[in-house]
Length: 508
Image 1 (cartoon, helix red, strand yellow):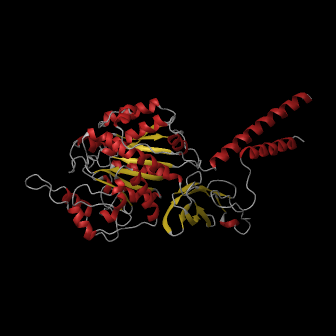
Image 2 (cartoon, helix red, strand yellow):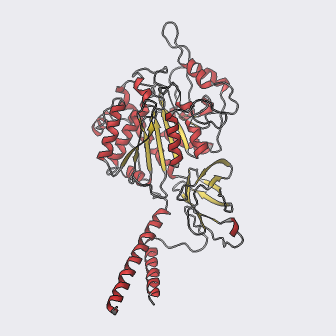
Image 3 (spheres, one colour):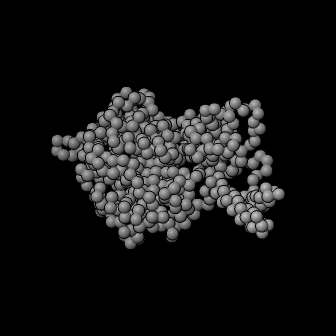
């Protein structure tokens, strides 16, 4: 082979080698960095009827299953770079359980980027949340190019929105009916929010198609933060919903008492508020501080929820518009407890309206009251700690069990070794366990301004005496032990220089 050809081959091979190294370097930097700590200001006005009517093309009306399906399909086609439509399964009567992803990367999981979700209408006659989520889909997609806060949120978060978990129930519910149970249950007569496995008591209710679909969904995607939207009160309720001391089926009893009609057609006394004063006690999770905080984020960003006013004279009032679920009234088989205990997802129940199914002319006001809260709640996923768990070869450790010391409800790593946990500012210790590896613990600090990045290396138990344990790089406020890997343009050029030297050393 001629020398000129040989040198040409060397140059081409060297170029591609350096190019691939550069790509890997940049992707590695992106995958191991927390989202930008800069959160643009977000403070929309609560209610301006002219502004609302002019900025929304989605009508303020209730959308039945056919209209809802047409809308989400239309949004998916109109905004293919920001949305991805999928179904997690079908209802008892065969209706799709639609979910819309809204994100700057809707069709792929960006490693290190958290998943959050909203679920509405699991009680078919609680209809406001269904419409709020349809308007949220429209608002996020339309605002991406004009609103810095929305752009930041979609660039750094994968948002999954399920407008209706109980489409069968909605089809038979009646607009304008504020109380009563028509449409509440699925087509087989089951309350879907009493149909999940329970932490405190065995739940023997027969599994329903909608519940099973959600269970499969949350087992495949590791959601970090969630909220489910209901109606019939104005409050943000957080786990636990159940208590080890509950002996009666209070959920059914209170539901009956709360909807009893007098002989003259007038509603009798709201017995719920009477009974709970004597029978309901708080059932607190190890993450009480976090749940109280995120419930407050929704309540205080809502136009009036934080005032804690009762829905009617004599009814229960809620301090700051939040409550522990069991302190309000205990129930068995609720979805938020299941998400938290089984999957480590911080889930809150948001009651949006005193009337379960108010008339459609009230929807513009509901949207104005809830828009800011819906957006700001999603951003809470970007507080606390996050990072990667890998072995000594840099390979991700999937399914590692993690908990924060003193908080016994744990969570796990994804197949990429990712983990996230919403925490308030403070000092913590993380504990990591995985089969075949030595346990690992690390102290870290969480601050208010940005999530702490904490990458952890696990060493195989067989090699524990030989492993040279080097401290992992800890982001956020923690000080790095030893020299930090260079980042930015200096790190890129350093990597390029190193690889060029390696290329020429290979060829002599």
